[in-house]
Image (cartoon, rainbow, N blue to C red):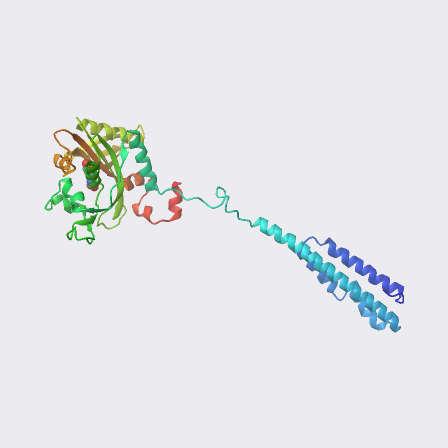
Length: 346
Ligand code: DAH
């Protein structure tokens, strides 16, 4: 500061400096700070007006003193502006980070969790119901041999029922197997044989799993679908036990207002055989699956003496049950993996 400057002009510079610094301090966000800075840069701002008069000052020493006061004021204002800009910018960035914060550990309120597919849900409910009735769960391989899928189930090589299964064969993977004897299982019934071979009676088993048929997909068919098989082997088992289990299952799975019925039918692996239907509350019937008393040839193939033991078996489609239960119009929809479809069943 120099004592030689005209007091009035120096006072004006000082006033302009103070009001600029306080305008900067009172800006509450970077947008209003930019407005303040623009006003200060304007030709008509108080400091610029004084700067415009500088040329008219005749006394060289005074001109220099006012000029120096102006540049000191300008430097102070600019550093106040930069400091405030940093301060406001930091606060705004912190607020934005807080606003856009995504806490990946808060999965309950954040991104959705996955859920089991409706076929898995149906399988688990079926397992629960049968476990409640005293059954155990067994599984078998999806790649089977002709023996388990057909032969042991009383369908020798020339049996006409084989053609109903639209079998997909695969290349044998060892010298042990001849061509056309290794296949993707067409039903879960081969697991009956595997269970009989490895468990001792009494047997109360259910066997859920994936099965394969050479089928063109449409609203009610898929080439890959799911079945659940049931097998009971004990002393003195009769057809009445079969009917009783089907009825108990129907009420436990669908509800007390549902009933079941058996219609005479034919399967090579059971004798006598039946198909069973479930009666809905509205009186209409859903065809569910097949069942019957295990054929003596099948018991023998499983290593069980048909003179000592009798048993029954049943099998039905799981996908069909899930479709009925949830009113799905087209079974193909269950396999498109469209999240909008899947999320309806969480
Ligand atoms: N395996 C038969 C099918 O896929 C269904 C079936 C019928 C299974 C009768 C059984 C049975 O266990 O006893 O068409």
